[in-house]
Length: 166
View (tube, rainbow, N blue to C red):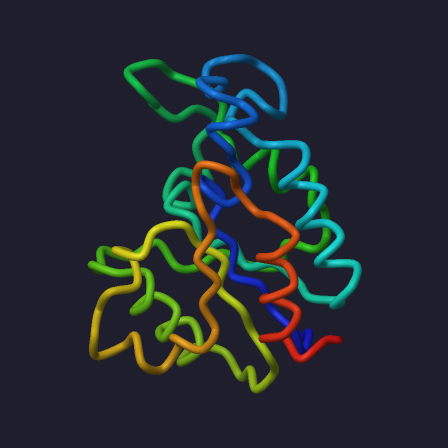
């Protein structure tokens, strides 16, 4: 296994309401609101750090379905396009469990895997990580991304610092 991992939320990290407003219902990679500049920033972060991706997005719950319902319409699963774009850099998904917060899912992932490397969590939703019992074990690894603009270079610099890459 790799020694650096990025836990990636998609919606709000690779999406940008500023760059691709309302594009969830089109039919291309950016049909899900995937921002080209956010994706470019993520790919550069991967290249700069050698990190691998574990999908932590709530979209992972639908990863085995060819379509998901979003805003009352059936659309192709957004993770299919994201995973194709990131290729072999995606190595796993957080488990699909009925737990309240992603922070707990992260802890469960670490409990199930022998990983002692560096990791960062890229997410736009603080509510997903507000389980106080668990938060303290990962709070130094969180980069909260502004969902209005998605993943910016400044977020990537924070992530590189957490991953201990200059």
